[in-house]
Image (cartoon, rainbow, N blue to C red):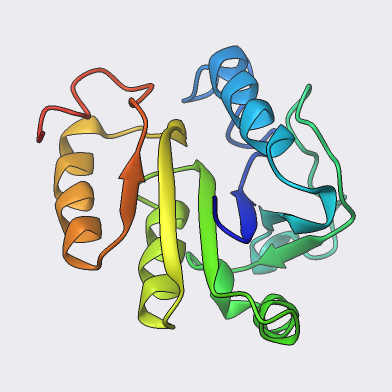
Length: 164
């Protein structure tokens, strides 16, 4: 188990009935993952574009287990563009991260690659990952392997594990 769990973009913009991801299955899997971490080791990241700054705060998807007040906003694909998050992890001497959420080809991917480039040991559990473009995800998985990312679990997306 990694030292910290980063829960990326599990917000109503992306995960809800009628959205790209199976809400019940994904939220259940992410909640099970959250339950395995001490609450002070769970970090939530929400995507908030610059044009949304003056709008209401982002809402987490219904049913998501919220166990800590460690919530960081990002405005770009990688959560590591948030300097407060980087400082928090540095201050707490984090060395390993597990990253879950949406989307495997988008913000999760950007955060995974950035974390690996920053020297963190990174793990991803495919059961806790939403992926919209499954074909593209095959390339993403190969890239993660080249970066030394620990990939575990069975994907919620059909055919995502065919590379094995």
